[in-house]
Image 1 (cartoon, protein in one colour):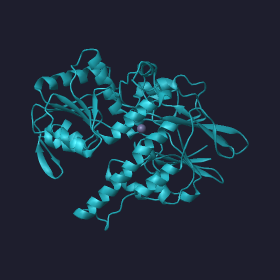
Image 2: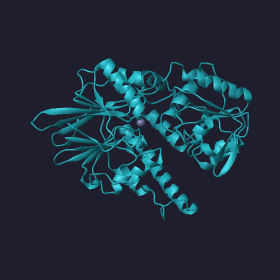
Image 3: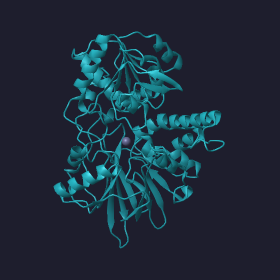
Length: 462
Ligand SMILES: [Zn+2]
């Protein structure tokens, strides 16, 4: 069996591993490249294996950098089953149509403005491709073995990173008649965060594909909850609107949970709070619905008829008309909206309106990638261009760090610590080179493990 790294090789997006046996091929994850243009260009390349000859896909979780290439794969002729956990299927029902919509809109806009080198500019995939991908999803519950090809089976282990996130354990026959297990960590979640159950520990395997996003990072011991409370209190004192740009999936629910906790415990007064993101509203409903994924506290709340991520006083604005009404809103009030890095979505309208007023606060609660408006704002730019117009920045720009859906280096080692056997081969993926080098050193020093970090296109023989 040969495994080729088609994505997330010395980078953090495009997760895609091509598994080839003598007569079969399958993919573990099928993600889009995001970020720098030289990476995004790779989304236009064909895979080295014809799409129609790939028998199936196994997805670790719903994030677009792990799932967003599926519609494109369907466009190229793939028609096999796509295995994922039941909550992942539900989230993809929201995420993939949204991704298709964004692609179609960008192509339309590029054609209208004439800024694309390609004439006409084409979307990477269309709504019909997203629908085709959704029709192939086949839910597999956690821990149940499922046959992939004759002689090859897999099962999902809970990973706690976002709703439905899993690691994939694959068992395959190999030349000579033996069996080997390959374990794909997917994105490893964190310990001690609200709502979802903790990651299930790595059990051991012959080969381990290990994510390394924060292999060089420590999330810090400062409680994000307190930072959040301080900034919101100050924002309320100024009498302004507090804008929280947040990723619709996971971060939005975590913020809602923390806000409710702070209010119930009397650390924050009750002020009008709005969730202004159609995807965030749908994702919050899904986070509520999958009881099997909740941690004990969340279960307890729901058993007492209380929903900490959708409290009764939370106001939602699914339609654009309702969203526009928020323009007349006077503070103090909180508006949570997407996208988390202010790269698009409704948050841009709110920023355009609220940035010029010093009473307002923009509170970033996630990582801000280089080149995004979010990054420019946290870096202190005095004006930003939104929808072609320069907007002065007078509002307070703040950030709450320490909120992350990814394990840091210490948490990765905890996740590895309960194994029943040692991996024969460790392959680092889903990390920038510096993070991978730091993690490789820790694995070597603390566990005595050697590891490799393949580049895009490199293969591993099992
Ligand atoms: Zn992820």
